[in-house]
Amino acid sequence: MSKVVRLGVNVDHVATLRQARGTVYPDVLEAAMLCVKAGAGGITAHLREDRRHVQDADVYVLKENIGVPLNLEMANEPEIVGIALDLCPPEVCIVPEKREELTTEGGLDAVGNRDTLADTIVAMQAKNIEVSLFIDPDPDQINMASELGAPCIELHTGTYCDSMGDAAVAELERLIRGSELAHELGIKVNAGHGINLDNIDGIMKVPHLDTLNIGHSIICRAVFVGIEGAVAEMQGRMV
Ligand code: PXP
Image (cartoon, rainbow, N blue to C red):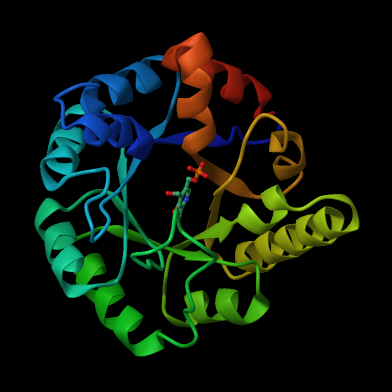
């Protein structure tokens, strides 16, 4: 029997709604707890340097109360690394971050940022934090994750999710090969970005997946079917 893929729900956009009006609602913890009740095996939150959605207090409240592992998405920047080392979430995922971007664009350049990543990975591992690197399905980047001793990668699925026709077929093959390479290297494989109900069937063809981190499409779908319904609906398709 194939292994069940864990769903990690990214709750950033619950915080986006709150920040849009400067209110105290919707409550990010309440949303996360409903996701967990509906079957999410993890909760993800991205503490961006510009704090456009998730705030520092959110990640502390989430970590203490969700009852499943918190995956903190973060840039490899000293201020955020300091917060992560203080918070000690079970998992962190290091992502590239540009202030002007709408959302994370592309994977991390692990090859180009080898030295600074090495320092951060060592510091995180000293605190028993599992580090994942958010990278494109590029063999050079995957090999560098292995060289750096990262126990986990998150494959960037955004390019596949945004493409169609032959380009989508080619990118899905790249994701499959990338996952196979990481698996051979003993690295745990997660994936995420841009996943929705229209592309999940393709994503599920990628082997060796541990976790899919999905945010925007679930929070959007929640407007129509409620957050528990949106989580259950996605999970029902993760087969
Ligand atoms: N994984 C990573 C590393 C991300 O940066 C994001 C976006 O914050 C996601 C997953 C979730 O992407 P989406 O909101 O498109 O589902």
